[in-house]
Amino acid sequence: MKFSLVAETLKFMEGTTKRLELTKYLVDLFKITPPEIISHVVYLLQGKLRPDHEGIEMGIAEKIAIKAISKSAGVPIKKIQQEYNKLGDFGQAASKILEQKTQTTFLTQDITVERVYDTLYKIAELKGARSQDMKMKYISSLLNDATPIEAGFILKIITNSLRLGIADFTILDSLAIAFTGTKENRGMLEHAYNVSSDLGKVASAVAKNGIEAIKNFQVAVFSPVRPMLAERVKSPQEAHEKMGAEFAAEYKLDGERVQVHLQGEKIILYSRSLENITNYYPDIVEKISRAINAKEVILEAEAVAINEDSGEFLAFQELMHRRRKYGVTKAVSQYPITVNFFDVMFVDSKSCLNLSYKERRKMLEKLVKEDTFAKLVPMIIVKNDNDVEDFLENAINAGCEGLMLKQLDGIYKAGARGSNWLKIKREYRNELGDSLDLVVIGAFYGRGRRTGKYGALLLGTYNNETDTFPSICKVGTGFTDESLDQFYQILSDKITIKKNPRIESGLEADVWFEPEVVIEIVASEITLSPIHKTAMDTIRKGSGLALRFPKFTGRIRLEKTPENATTDQEIISLYNGQKRAVQEEKKQNYL
Ligand code: ATP
Image: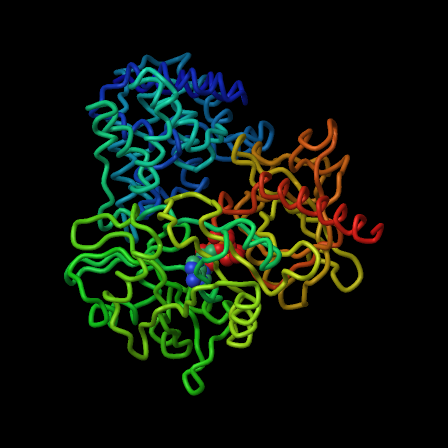
C-alpha cells in the first residue's frame, strides 16, 4: 500500500478537530487498507509500532532527525533549526526544507506503508553505541524516497509529535463503520479492546473476519486487560443508596496496582496504565509462583511497601523509590513489599470476567496460598452503615487510603469506571471528598524564594471526548523546596517551544510542557470559571470549571499516563454532587 494514502489522510485530519470528520477520514482509509497491514496503519496513526505494553519505542531524539534531514536535503543543521523555530512544527519545517530539494531531483520510487513500518521497526530495535548513527542513516534513506508531505509525517511519527486528537474510541468507531457497516457494533469492538489492550489486533481481526471474530475475542495471558475502575462516594449512606443493603468492602491499599500474568515459569507484571513493570519487582517474580495454585492465571493485586519489623503498610511514595533504571536490587531490599491480591481475571484457559464478584473472590481464596509475602486483601461483607464506618476506621489505622466497595453480583467490567466498584477515602468528610489527578501543562516563574524555579504550575484535566487537556487551575501551594527542585528537573525535559495543540487554556503560561506528568491535588471547591476550559460550555455557556484553593499533596503519580488523569466528566459529576450537597444543607437549615 502506498504510504502517500496514509499521508494524505493525515493531512486532512490535521485540518480538523471535528470528531465526525476525523471518523470519516479514518473509515475511508481503513476501507482501502489491505487487512494484512491494517494493524500497522492503526499503530502508525497513534505514533506507535506496537501496543504500549510491549514497550517498543522508536526513541528518536529531534537532534538525530534533524541530522537525517540535513543529510537528505544537503542543508546545514542550523538552517533546519531556524525553520523549526520559525514554524514551531517539526514536520512542517522538514516538509518545507525537503520541498526545495525535490524541485531539483526526481523521486526514484513510491514508498509503501510496509517499508515505512519495517524501517521504523528496525530503528526501534537498534541498540548500542553505534545505533544513533545507524538510525540516522535509516531515516535519511526513507526521506530520500519520500515526498515532502510523506517525509513530514514520517518525522512526526518518529519524534512522537503527531497530534491528531484521535482518541482510541474514534478509531473503534471508524473500524466498526468500515468493517461492520454500523457504529452500533462499537461496543463489541470496545470490549475486544478492553480485554486485549491492542487496537492493532482488534483492527486486524475485524478487517479479516468481520464481527464474528470480535465476538470470539478472548482474554489471554500476556495481553493485559484494561483495569476496572471505581466511582467515588462521600459517605456510607451514598454507598448504600448506590449498592443496596449488602456489598463487599475491601481495604483500599495505598500502593501500586499490579496485573500479574503467569504461565508456568513465565511471569509478566503490568502497571495500572499497562506498562510492563516486571523489572521493578524481581521479588514478585521470584516468590509469587509458590503462592499460586494454577499453571496459567491473570490476577490483580496491590503491591504495598511495608515496615518489615512491624508489618505495617507504608505510604505509596516509599514504593516509588523502586522506579529506577539502576540499583533495583538494592531498592528491593531497602523497600520491602507485600503483594495483596484482590481479583482474578483468567484461570487455566478460562476467562473469569463474567463471573460475579462473589464467585471471583471465592476462586481467588482457593488460588492464593497466603504467606508472609502474598496476601489476600482484607474483606468483609457489609450489612449496614456502621459496618462501613468501623471497617473504614480499621483500614485507615492500618495505613490504607480508605475502602473499595464492591457489588456482590457485579462482573469485572474491563476498562470501565462504573458503579459496580465504589471507593471511599479518608478525605471523604471534607470538601471535594477525593483528590484529583491532574496533568501539568504549563508553569509560571517564581519570585522571592522561588526565583529561578517554578512558582506555580498550570494543571489540566483529560477530556476523553476530544482527547485534549483543558486547564482547570493554577497551583502554587503544597510545594516544599525539595519538591520544587524535583519538579524543575522532571519538567525541564518536557518543555515545548509552542503550546501543544492538545492543551486548551485561556492563560498564557511562561513555559509550556508536553502533557505527560500527572500530580495529585486536593481542593476546596469546584467553581464556574471564565478562564479555565475544563467542561467548557457544559454547565453554563461560555464558562468552564475551575478549582478553588488547590493544593499539591506531595504525590507525583508516576504510574499514571496523562490519559489516566481525572476527566472532565468526573469533574462535572463532582460539581453536581457539590451542588446537591449545598441544596441538602440549605433544606436542613430551613427545616
Ligand atoms: P486512586 O487515585 O484513588 O488510586 P485510580 O484512578 O487509580 O484511583 P480507582 O478506580 O479510582 O483508580 O481506584 C482503584 C485503585 O485503588 C486501583 O487502581 C488500585 O491501585 C487501588 N486499590 C487498592 N486496594 C484495592 C482493592 N482492594 N481493590 C481494587 N483496587 C484497589
